[in-house]
Length: 129
Image (cartoon, rainbow, N blue to C red; front, side, top):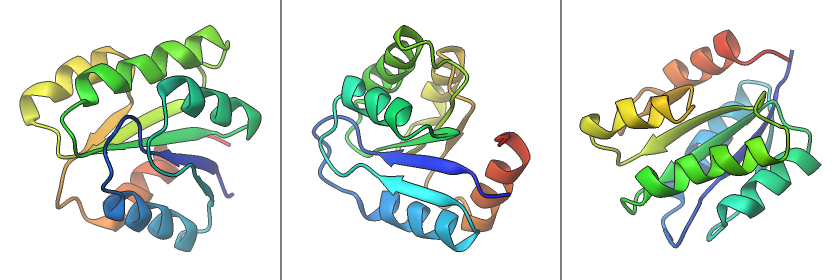
């Protein structure tokens, strides 16, 4: 069954090729994907997630601001009583940062080179509709 997934680029990171590749892979796997575009604030991402009634949010960061921005998205979702939305992330994220991001509530972090089928398989196994 298709899931509704928001792919978002928080902060000032202007590189979205990876986010678009993930969005395309998830679409090709049969999911409904909304791409929010560049330069989104955590509040904008959470508001879009709620308005679009998504099952999950995929965050992408290449700028190094993931340690601040990803937890802020989690906080914004919580403030909107939407902590049930599964949030996963990816991008250039050092291995040393992954534990703090999962502690902040992210369900999974994908690093560069993760095969697309591994991501789509994880989505299908871990995001309920």
